[in-house]
Length: 182
Image (cartoon, rainbow, N blue to C red; front, top):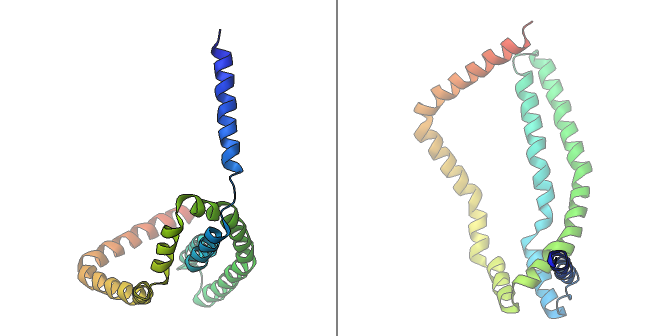
């Protein structure tokens, strides 16, 4: 009959450990300054905006696809202008909300994680990496490298992929026509 006492003791111990973690002592000011420098260089508050861009972009693409072949060009173009403007207005409205949430969570969740899991020396090394001129040079080259690679892959695979892509578009078109035809 000691099982309920043991279970209760384990539960109290687990809750105590959880509470202790929730109320961890704040980092020393010198370490907190290093954490803040890492956060400034990393700039994670743009994550919320990036998360919004994917579904908004998808919605605009889906609208464009739905209008293609179903509306006269002038009506399609006017509708797309309206849709793009609505998407821009949504982003302008939602971005400050996600940025405020990210800023709050960065300080409440991310900063303590960095302070807990990295030593002062590791934070200094991380800052050196984030400030590295070589890293900046590499990041500046990314668009050019992605464009070069994309163009190369497209040229290299066009003969094989284009007919398959055309076939896919035709199949999708047939499915859409079948779905909208009474």
